[in-house]
Image (cartoon, rainbow, N blue to C red; front, side, top):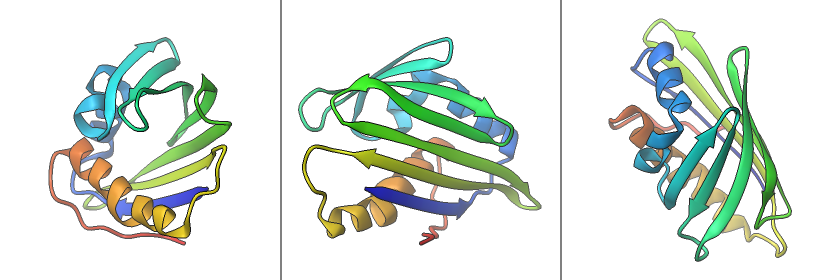
Length: 136
């Protein structure tokens, strides 16, 4: 399943980077996440859905992007990136996710991620309501 979401934020790029760099704060904005334990460039994520979904992902900042990739866990494959650039009014955030699970994902679930889940995560990350824009 490939999902993308893009949105303009009213907070500065440096503030978005600061929040993303603090793995311990991820459960505050990443809904469904029970815990996040970070060490070096890896973070272990424990989700509530399905019960106790566990993902160990490697996170690396590459220029204006945060790249992440599954090291081990309860899905077949997962990778993606969060691109963050500056705009005159704040930051531009673009989120890309590519995940392979053992079963097929219905199209409505992809739409749910693009139109509800990712926008909610971004609103929580920056601590405000935001303008939502989905990219194909």
